[in-house]
Amino acid sequence: MKILQNYVNGKWVNASAREKISVNAPSSGEQIIFSPRSKLADINSAVDAASGAFEGEKWKSFKPHERGAILYEMANMIRESSEELANLETLDTGKPLSQARSDVEAAARYFEYYAGAADKVFGETIPVEPGILDYTIREPVGVTAHIIPWNYPLQVASRSCAAAIATGNTVVMKPAEDTPLTAVKLAEMFDRTALPDGVFNLVMGYGAEAGAALSAHPFVNHITFTGSVETGSAVMTAAARNIVPVTLELGGKSPNLVFADCDQDLAAKWVVKSILQNAGQTCSAGSRLLIESSVKDAFLKKVLERMEKVVIGPGEEDPDIGPILNGTQYERIEEFMKMVYDEGGTFLIGGAREVVAGYEGGYYFQPTVIDGLSSHSKLAREEVFGPVLSVFSFDSEEEAIRLANGTEYGLVTGIWTKDIARGHKVAEKVKAGQIFINNYGAGGGIQMPFGGYKKSGFGREKGLEALRNYTQLKNVAVRVY
Ligand code: NAD
Image 1 (cartoon, rainbow, N blue to C red):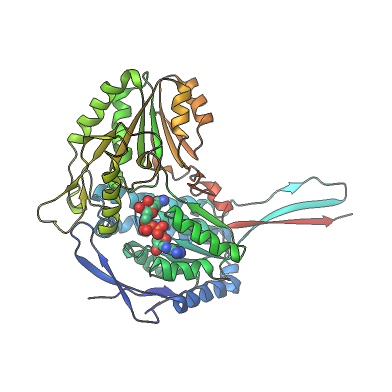
Image 2: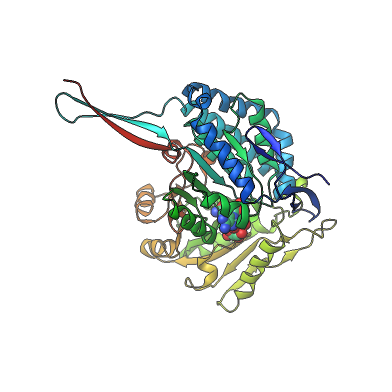
């Protein structure tokens, strides 16, 4: 079976140790391909290539709009290959085809968005005193490392590398070991552009080997990481030794706050969508439902009616929800389910594995709603990363806010109310990086800064705000008379 190759310094190369990792299809559990098990030596060559390209004259001589032109070309190529990319993403992650198609379009939009931004990153002049001209310049940071998760491989890879390249940096990307396929396609597309060799490099391998080596590399100047809190902390520790900044996006336990006066049908639709998208394997999943007590029964009825109709199946058949990534992720979910009764909860629906005929090797999990848990329970506070919704009720705005803020995470919050003043007030008091009032995830979020409070991480991706990650500020003071 074929072994994928790394892309380093403009060339396709084997990993030095010639060891390989099996890449499996979540839908069936069957093997698709092998990826290279890269180690320190491979990371060293990729970082050397990125470092050489950053210091070299070729990349430095690119005008900002010429960098943008390459990113526009990428957006066009992604759209031209959209069906191929969506099929690959579905094969690799198991997600329903229509969700993969949205991911592909989002990837194209990231490239196009940062293409347009490339020549609009500028400094300021600062009034100091007569005779002094003081100005700032935003310069690229240098070699940027991108450690990509398995849940949205193409989207996350595109959003961070497009912003880094728009601002004149070079890139070393390590996709998750489970999902390298679309990252390889991105490298193939970059290879067809005029991007100088070494500006974009792709190295595949295990997190604890290739990922750890990349995080600790002394010539890396910035690390963007999306994944678990535990691994984020390891990446940050490695970066701290080299005094290197990190952008960490570490997931959440995001609540939807449903007030009695809201449009309940609209809210129920989005409450269900926000927890079932990608089978709940989404950092911004709406995994807690906080309902005003007076409408709890009526609202839950609407949610359960929708959950009952959900079609579970292989991503290729475009169901409502596809499989869990692999056995390890499935077992994590199962461990949480074992806690439900001990933590005072009951299942309103779901709670078990679903066997899909013809796809017995895949790990499918039923849409699950749990009521009655204490807000202090593990299930109420920790990220399950599955289609599992925990329900709580409140009697006042203050209680809703206290519950919303009651976890160590703070990524996203949905607020559902027709009282727009209350919507703003609650938004002000909730500790989360992104708040949606009467929607959840409007517009796909390309333009909106995204990132966490508390253990959801720090730094912002998406939007123009992300460009700050990839630039450093230089102040120049000139005596002119
Ligand atoms: P992870 O955080 O270990 O992996 C994410 C990425 O980090 C992968 O590319 C992996 O290879 C890499 N990595 C792993 N160990 C590393 C290390 N020591 N140094 C550098 N890079 C390393 O996540 P996981 O084990 O695949 O999933 C576990 C849990 O993490 C999930 O159940 C979920 O709760 C969370 N998660 C969150 C997100 C998110 O979008 N925030 C994405 C994936 C996983």
